[in-house]
Image (cartoon, rainbow, N blue to C red; front, side, top):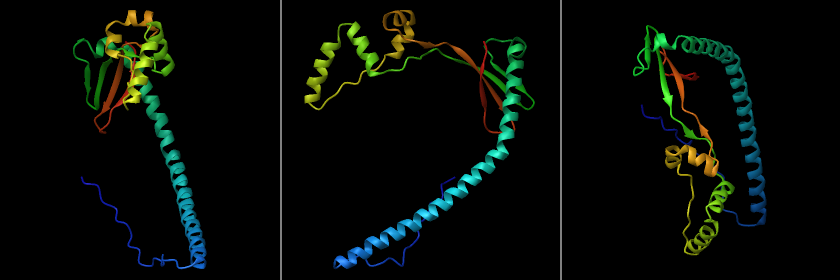
Length: 195
C-alpha cells in the first residue's frame, strides 16, 4: 500500500518580506518573534496531548504486557522441561500446535568484545606494529586517505582459543532461542531458551 502524501498548506496571507528601512526591519523581527511564540504554543499544546495519549495507552497495555510476559515465561519453562518430547528429532526444530507453533533456532557464537581505539592500539603494540601503523596513517592522511582498523571476526571465530589468549577477546557462547508464533497474529515472540 502506497504511503499517503501529506500536502503542505497553501499560504495565502503571507506578509510582505521586502524591507525598505530600519523600522520595517524592526517590525519584521518583532513579527518573527510573535509568530514563533504562537508556533511554539501550538507545539506545546500538541505535546501535552501526545503525552496524555501515551499515558492512557500505557495504562491500557501495561496489564496486557504483564500477562504476555507471564504466559511467555510459562511457555519457556514448559519447553525447557519437555524439550525432548516437543522436539524429538534434532534436525526438526519446529513443533506445531493448533493455535500456533514453537521453533528453536541456534544462535551461533559471536564476538562480545567491543572495538575501541585503545583496544586496537594495544593489539598493534603487542604485535610490534603500532609505530609502523601510525607512520602509514600519517602518510596516507597527507594524501587525503585513511585506514579503518577493525577486528577480523571471521578469523577470531575460526580460532577462538588463540584469539582469547593473544588479544583477550571475549565471546557470546552459542545458544538457542525459542520463537513462539501464535496463528492469530502476524508476529513472533522470541525468548532465550536453555539448551
